[in-house]
Structures are given as C-alpha cells and as structure tokens.
Length: 337
Image (tube, rainbow, N blue to C red; front, side, top):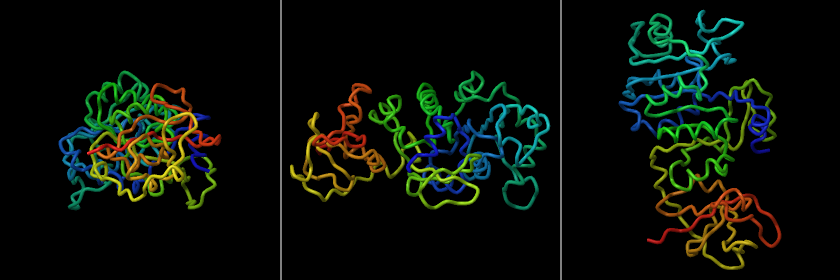
C-alpha cells in the first residue's frame, strides 16, 4: 500500500522519520560540485544524532565547505540519544540549540577525520553550540540562519512540506530535501515544478525508503527491516542542476488512436506508462506522475496536471477515459527541435 505510513503521518502530524546515512550518501554523491565554498544548513536535524549532520561533518574538508549549521527543536525525541549535553538535553524539557562548524580537524591525532573528532569538537569547543528559543524552522531566529545559508539539505516534517518549500522559495535558496511523491501534485508545489524551479533528484531505490522512526511499520509491501519502517513513494526534491536532468528518454513507440485514447473531457491522449510515450505525437499527453523522474526539460514541456480539473489554472481536467477515471496524470508535450 503506497504511502500508507506517510499518509498516516499527515493525518496524525507524526513527522519523526529519520533518514539513513546510506541513503544520504547515495544521493549526495551527485551534488559534490555544488558544495565547495558553501554554507550548508540542516534545519530539521538534531546535531550529532542527524545523519545529515554526520555526513557533512565527516566530509567537511573533502567538500571544501565554508560552514555547516545544524539545528534541533524543543523537545525533539532523539535529542541527546547519542551525544548528551547537560545544558541542552536534560529532562523534563530539552532545549533547542544549534551547531555552527567552520572547520573540522583531526583532534585525536589518529591521522583521519572521523566521528570521534566531531564528538570531541562539540564537547570541548562550546563556541560552536548555542541555544535557540524553539528551533522551529518557521521561527524568526531560524529564518535568519536560512538567510545565511547557500544550500539547505534535510528531511523536513512531512506535514509541513508545503510551508517548508514556500520558505525556501521565498528566500531563493538552493536545496536537496526528502518528500512524498504525492507532493508533486500539491497545488502549492506543482507550479514550481511546471516552471522548472523544482525537480526530482536521483531518488531512493524503488522509490521507497527505510526510515528510523518511533512509529509502527504499517506498510504492506515486502522488504521489511528490523529497527526501521518502510515508506513507499519517497523522493528527493532539488533545484540544483544534476546530470540526469539532461538525459533524454529514448522513445520507441508510435502513435495510433486505438493504442492511445483521448480523455473524455480534454484534448489529450492517455499514456499509461512512461515507456509507452509515442515518439511521433505532438499534442498534449497524460502520463503517470512517476514520469517526473525521467523528465528532461529540453525534451518535454510540462503543460499542467490532469487531476480534479479544479485545483488551479494548471489543473486542466479530470483524468477520465471512456467513462473510467484514471489516477492523476502529468500533462506533457514534446518539444520540437
């Protein structure tokens, strides 16, 4: 059942899904050229507990970072689990704080930079730690940190994804963030996709991720693993240029009215699979939203979505063929060269 865990999270406002280091490493290897000399902000992460923080701290020198900023919010359930700071992490109330790092050295003298060096830095140089009022990314203090950042990299709260992206766009920030596949057609998100201001990264294997989380694993698909929950329909969203964005699809199918029926109430053909996009049709085509993973802006134009027909000027119609309603579609058109 695709997205069951994340759908439940949206309903119950459960947002504690922690990304595994292996998934972060697999995605971020494609962006290294963007990081040199930049300030990286992880503003939905607990310093040291967050794998985003660990990734950038461990690779700080290799990436040539200018600064790493990481924040946590009041009462975070994982705060202090791996590295405890008495003034921040003690019960009954954990206090929000931030970490700002401008250099990472081999402090234990073993000839390599590892987590023990990062731990030593945090424990012994209190200039890198300071308190926050709430740690909420929407707060004035955290928005000021955002202004100082060049690139934001994190897994934001699922229930606040719309607000989170809106803030990034407001401040014209570059980003690499985790989100739900269904966000593609959110009325607050889709216009950014249509205008080529946001696109998909390389993604999780099979569009599914295993998150560390306190919640029960309710997914019905296979590949369950101990200590994590499986979530389908998970994507990396970014506005940084990556090679895959310029890779055109090889189109081998040819159009025929019998193979590609039109929608009942809109002049576009239904294409059930991305692999079946015809190479010789110049009109509008309705394709699955998973097409976005293969989208190349020099090959196709995104004309809108075919969903409800009422979400906005870009929601062109309901996806109905011969009286049968289809799942929501992206409306695309081939670009003639």
